Amino acid sequence: MELDLPSLPFLPRRRPAAADRTLPLARNATLALRLPRGACIAVGAGRIWLTERGDLDDHFIDAGGRHVVRRAGPVVLQGESALPARIRVKRR
Image 1: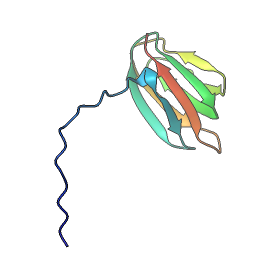
Image 2: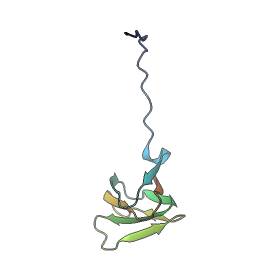
Image 3: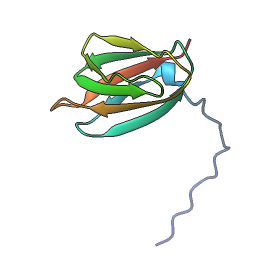
Image 4: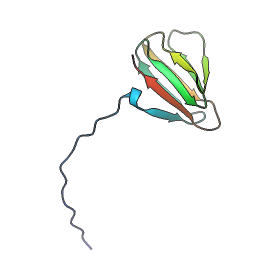
């Protein structure tokens, strides 16, 4: 059986900026981002581990907490809670 579907014109979709999205991060899942200095990472649920280039300290951020990136460059996040963490990145 053949089905003839009408052709629809291509409509480009606006890709949401990182600041427009809340990202889930499962336990032990990692996410590497390249962020500018001053970007803010807010945790809406769960707990994450965060490290950024040039910072000798690791950071654990719980729900309701946030971290401001001190140096432009790579930032690595890892989910630390049993339920997925929810993070929002706001570039300044």
